[in-house]
Amino acid sequence: MRQTHELSTAPLLSDEFSWCIKTRSAHTCSKILKRKLIAAIARYRHLFLTGIATLFLSVLFLTSSYLFLFQLAEHGW
Image (cartoon, rainbow, N blue to C red):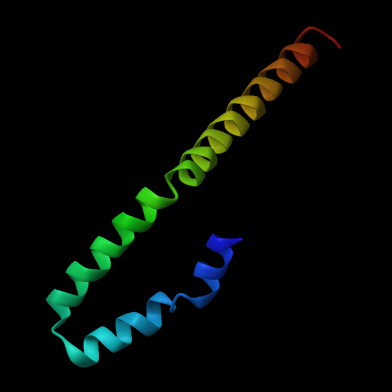
């Protein structure tokens, strides 16, 4: 429940970027946002890895299903 609360109270990235541009240079803002993006990926890496694994497995499943159906059609199902 704590993560949900953190996510709901966290400022939107676009709001933070506009605030950063108003108060700092664009180069400094891009460095800050890059660090924040890397930190977010590190914090939620299990979700990213799960998503990538799910995508890979679904492509593998669809490809094997297509090849199986193609073989059935070729041999007169």
